[in-house]
Length: 192
Image (cartoon, rainbow, N blue to C red; front, top):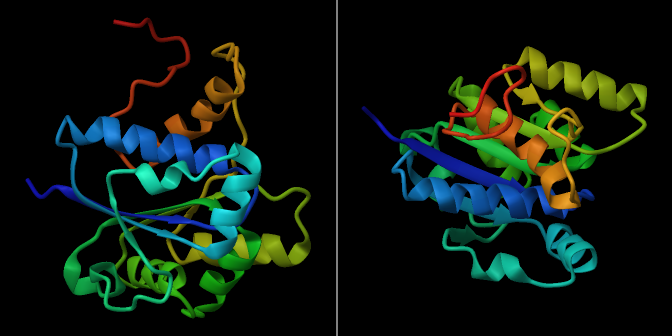
């Protein structure tokens, strides 16, 4: 069985907690050998928003390889490297718009373009609200191209008690969409 190879893109949309939790979950899953490689790309705006929202630069401590946003020599800039999952979390509407238009002006948009053209799994975790008709049309284009747009809309039926638990409901859904092992809340299922 071929192990999943994952690209994580982090853009400057609000919602750095989602990126933080996603990276933490991927570190946990690393122990279960659920996937092979993980490559991470952060935009400059993502780093600035992370510092504002989370008050630190803990992204520097994550045990994955980070690539510069202009590093078109990264393996996942080509379909031949066989990266099969890309999660952009959070995904700004600017990034979504460039992907929808086929504009590959940085490593995040190039990797997304590669994932779509190779018919692999692209998951965009958007957080923008409200949506303009331009956003809706871009979401439609991404969906028609085979991507999955997963708005960062937390669920409440698991009765989350903290902001992290609330945000984790979104990341649990993202991991499900990526078909990665996940122990998140399941509606009307008993915990084993």
